[in-house]
Length: 102
Image 1 (spheres, rainbow, N blue to C red):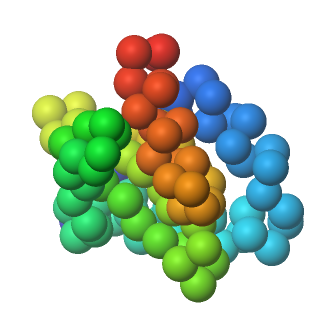
Image 2 (cartoon, rainbow, N blue to C red):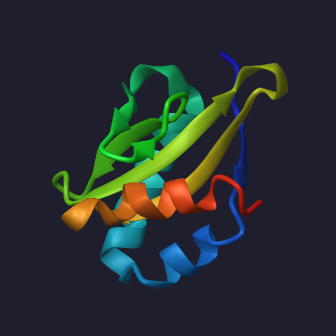
Image 3 (tube, one colour):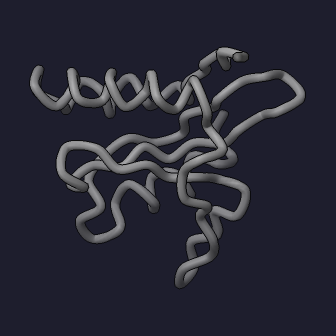
């Protein structure tokens, strides 16, 4: 079984700093699942003005938080662009804003 490499958008560090220790532990567990098989999770589409086609999402912490990521198959890499709560679509808005801010 192939283990995917991991890269983060530069602002994901800020996302992680907002998580308390218990939520961070749940994130780390979920991340291990993503790196084993990133294709299993939910594809994102276009909602309102937020176009995240090609990205995926996975829930953690009782579906309160989301990880938004893209599978880069050629590089065998998972690129995480945003982590956060779904409230007011914030995690998706953040991901969309970061698309051109690498």
